[in-house]
Image 1: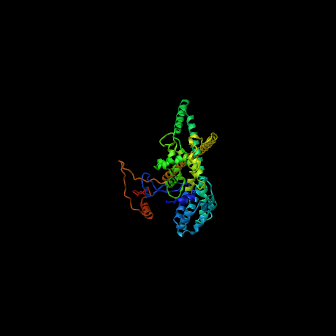
Image 2: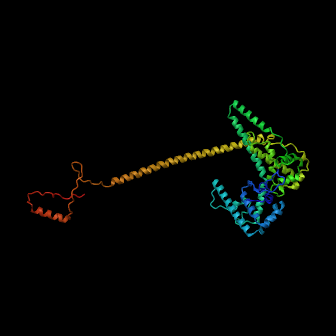
Image 3: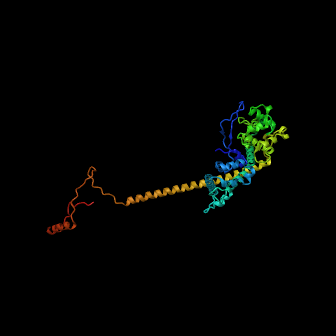
Length: 455
């Protein structure tokens, strides 16, 4: 995404923006502009970063709005005057902005639902309009179209959030350092006396080694800028010129040095102290040092507090006494990042969280045991049902009449006799009665022979 950093940084009061830099050949007699190389955009860290950038990208496609942005100043943006120009953009741009807002509202609704689900909050009638009010970067009352108020809210919220960005980074780094110290102490507690003393000695040697670095020039001082001029730019230090230096390092040629362009100037100084190959050098500390350097320069140079350094501001800073005779720069290893009291509070907080995690783990264990018991009960019940089905099936078989087998012969073979023709009961009785009448009275009646066997 190609964001014009000139007005983007002005719009955001810049903590991050994608820039287009032109590589400079320091050794060429006649420098020629080379093909522009896009640099990776830096995430602002805002939870609506993507929405912010997409809105800016769409607005930049409108010629009228783009022209207004090129001539706008910080006050025009902060007081909402620029937002009124939204009414003059093309229909196509407004349509795209409307779609972006609907997508953002949909995303926020999903975030809210996930949050409510995670807290087991049941709400049959969720009032999204009320819940969306907690997000300040858009108008929650109008969820379908992007209006001037949305742009004004987006700018004011981003400005406020970015102003707190550095403070949050400092706090995050402090917690990181306290966690390191906590883990170090816990590790040493687990060692016997001999091993602990040996490990403490090793750690102290690493600290001492880290502190043995060349002198670090104060950021923004003539000594620091001359070093960049000579070692990075490849120019004669005796020909140092502040105006030329400014233009060389205004890589996107927008007339100002933004925070990223400034931080790039401190790389040579940071390399004196930090090397990613060394065990004793912490790269998280290096980034904190870079932030401190940038804040130092902004405090002394950025007179209008717009988080940008103009050429005029830069040249005026070179006229100050501190520019030629600065105080020696104190690196992080020479100052405490936190107090012992802060560390104790932090450790107490860790213990509380650990206890909470243990309680949750115990609850989960109990729930797991309960699920196992329920599983066993369900398995036993399933077996009972299965046994009952088998017994019922067997009873049904037993109730059925067994099949009659034909008589067996002397060798066990089955003998089958031809079945006599069936005779009607009345017809069978008549000859029998007739024969009985003709037989002598003193002769006993014999049962009929060879009657068919009914199976």
